[in-house]
Length: 151
Image (tube, rainbow, N blue to C red; front, side, top):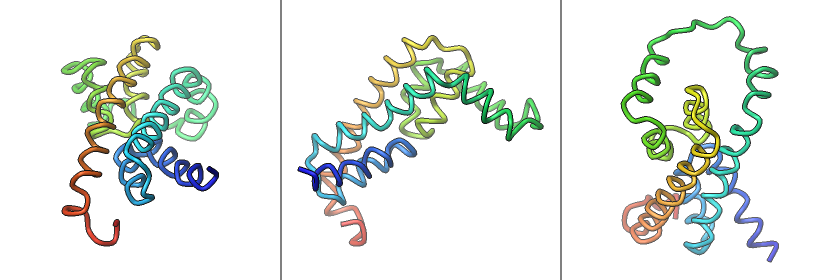
């Protein structure tokens, strides 16, 4: 039991940082497909919930203290505005596991004033769908596609 838990923790933590790392870590740890899916969704949703409920505290206490002197409108900021205007909250939630990190997608949505309850719902749906897709693809095609180092 503790052995299985020891394998789940890296999947959980890695999916908090970059979503695709969760299924890859679960595959290399030889976890079951369902366990990998659940740990990956839990990792992303932990970040979403933490930033949704404690985002203001983190921004005022930590981010503004270390990054007080920053340019307001950079090219990168304009790209984020373009993503938000083009796709809105459902699009940002759908793109978060693909291109953004769970932290980046959540901060992007919150910075544009997304309602907390909708953010959590859309991010959960996105995490569940993409976790099933990524994990299934890695588990079913991993032996043929992934290099021997990962296996």
